Length: 157
Image (tube, rainbow, N blue to C red):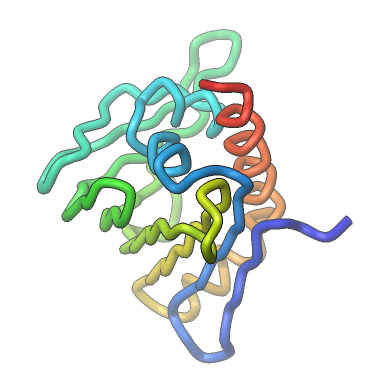
């Protein structure tokens, strides 16, 4: 089955370009990234901090049934424009990748009020780190998360 979220990785570059079209108004798509509750629901993790403002911070963590943290990520919001743009860093704890820089662009798609696109540019410290990331089940994971986002927001979150 073809993934709806597209990932473009040019040889020799240290970035990924991630694109996903949604059957959602751009304001609802942006809201899915701007609300801690919604973000946690579609990402399948707990959002413990979300300060969507310049120099704000965020923190995610997922625990197993015993209460042990099995996934943890955090970063800083560098800039944010309502319904248009989030620029942030992202770093997973206990992972060899280090911090990455992310530009999330939210746009209405064509003349439709009910379709939008998320364009993400993710920049890694090196092309080797980017290539390591691509060896993980990254593409299917982000596409499934985006599927959950769209379903959740369509249900009237």
